[in-house]
Image (cartoon, rainbow, N blue to C red; front, side, top):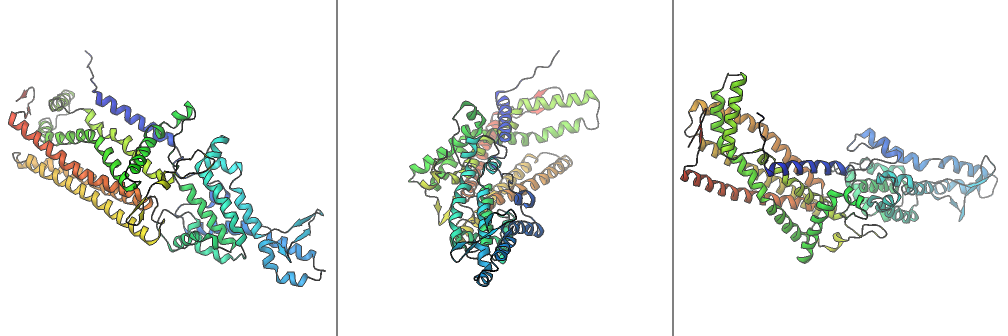
Length: 532
């Protein structure tokens, strides 16, 4: 006789949700992560938080690029005019000619090996060529990771870089010199270390970027341009609804059905609250967490039931200890299954937490990407939510990271890191304390020898879980440190909500337990029957 397998609706739904989450996450690919490097300096020398040799290598690449052909070209020009009366004056102006190729108000030219008259190569000309290389079709395709011309033209990072190129071209008029030593103070930042740990070089680079319109050195301007591009490649794509075609809608299903609606809700609530982003963030977090409360309650109830059953499960395991034959193992499994059934514990309860995953991931993505919703003319990115909302809180810009607003912003993010980590530790401490007290209460009537064996097993599991929890706390603090300040506020509110949620659920569970005791609803499992 075949055994009938029953799946509860919650189990089937949980499996479907988990499968959907995996599909959506894998379909995101690299669109929301760092793009592949697409110029020679990036592909050969970029190494994240790299060592000094890699830092020097990238700086050397920039130096070689700006220097390429300049010395030989200017020397050919001087050789070409050596019989002219202004030759000596041109020699004294050699460094200025290398910068812009102009002498006495005219373009410096010489005859090359083919007999053609050509203008000298200059630091300024090579730098301008570097800027132009970031907007050609080949490099656009590498940024957008697609060969579709429309998608390339409208890709967010492409739009930003094109705007940066035009902006940096206006700074070329300020270039008066080419001093290679100016690149030393931005070597670390040139290697893409932004987002790791702050260094003096990074801080100098950030300060220089804030005053880039005053830069008068070719090497420094080139270095700052590359730093700006590295930052652009790390930026997330802004929130937008993608459904120009049916295929586009389903290819961006995760974005269209989860992320965009949450971001839209966050924006609308903020607008209704006078445009204050912090109020929208607070109310949206509370709303989303409240909607997920039934799932949390089911998961919490399942955990409590499992804890209450541990003494009975221990009895069953002791009963069959040392009996490894198939019949004994089958009987043990049947008794355990009967215990689970009586207390209504099924696989669906284990999978219930995964039901919250799509919602919380949608909130995380919406908050992470909302700061980038700034209008870009001529593209699909026409939302201007980040500029329409007031994103400040006690002088902290919630749309910026720790480097986005001076000392006050940095201090604010540090405070957020401490608050998020502190509330997470508090939540874990209260949870573990309750579990310990509940365990001691359940073991009041259990003999000492049996209690010791059970506690030893529990302590091993607790130690493993403790390391995992500390790792999660560290990762959460790292994310707050490297992300926009709004994300830290979201997690802080969420942690406070979780603490309150835990107390409320524990209170309700305790009441249910007392009601069961009053009704005599506690069951004890015996080898072949259930006794009430």
